[in-house]
Image (cartoon, rainbow, N blue to C red):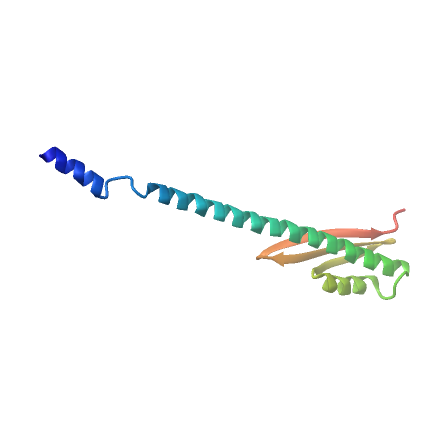
Length: 123
């Protein structure tokens, strides 16, 4: 008689493995959701970095055009205005010979992304 009672307790009680598949499936789904969220965040950071580099190039080209007389204004003032239009912050504008060098940064999710670029006539 005690054998039947033990078998009945393990079938009906909490000591069985019923529901283990549900827990496993929830764990797998949670890990996948977390991984996809991290991929999205990292992908967004890479996109923002590319945008910052592209903006640095545009700022440098606009300043170099001003330096060569193709557009009006002082080169570093043109660079500052262009940086505002492209959504980056101008950190440095330097003119050497007939070249302009700029350094810009932007911020995304608390991470500062920096880029630098140069444009002008190369001797």
